[in-house]
Image 1 (cartoon, helix red, strand yellow):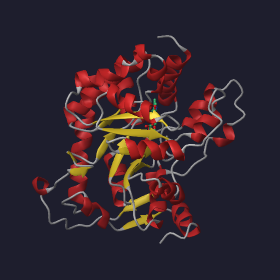
Image 2: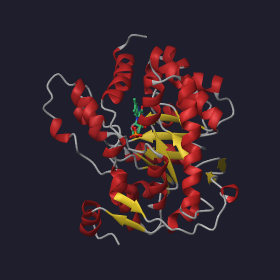
Image 3: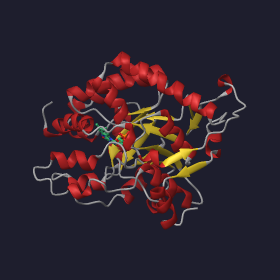
Image 4: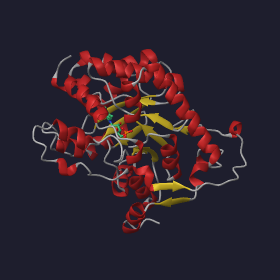
Length: 344
Ligand code: FNR
């Protein structure tokens, strides 16, 4: 298991932790939800559930794609699967393309079904793969849905990365042929309305905006480069809040997962208030698993979810959809972004 690709998976984990940012750096600090003193609600009346593609979710929260492909990351996948099963959250595995090339690595992904046999598990592969590859990664983890990541910026910064990005035709073929929901996701660079329009044009119904503000693959890949000459891309991309504002330009919207910099329940509440259907969290879960232990992480996540429910109460939101009715104020920078992008 010591292939170059397995080594890269381990490096991604350790570098994601190295660059883990304090809460204060997230783009969600550019949004305030205004306090209302009269919620007229009780905690027992708050319904945190939502429905994604016919699956009832206890919370609109996803544990995002991160790991698998090496011994260490296989162990992390097992822990993530235990977390997801214990909290009834949906989860995604990291990119499985390494296991398509080296089938002996498949157990580092399929291990999630050992610990989370009944939960909603999402497979993950990069754009550019064939329909057969998509089917193979779905089967590998008996997935309920497939995430396809679009990571042009990451590949460009990686010296060994791809340089050809003709993705739409393959994506369209997978969406047409796979009989499971497909989610097209970024990896921390965000999406414009134009990108999402193109995706909807080929039949994509679910996107994961994954914006800047959390784990930065620009910083991670720049660190891995022998010469760091692409450090000028460290702040490339749209933040998650900017990506969410972009979606206001669309007359019809796909199902929107918002990830990138979600660390606290308040960040997730703000993402949903800005129009996301669900929020995804990667780096923060990893941070807790790496710096504490499994039991402490499960405890943290349970408290996190309780906090989410309490914030629904505080914002007068009986249902997840009610979260969209918030009064919000943006920072001058975010407000300027909205104005320059003609977003009302
Ligand atoms: C990731 N992410 C990711 N995404 C993906 O689609 N396939 C992948 O294989 C990986 N691998 C990966 C490894 C590690 C260690 C991290 C931390 C993240 C990206 C992830 O799903 C998410 O889009 C971004 O990390 C932004 O969310 P956070 O980390 O800011 O919550």
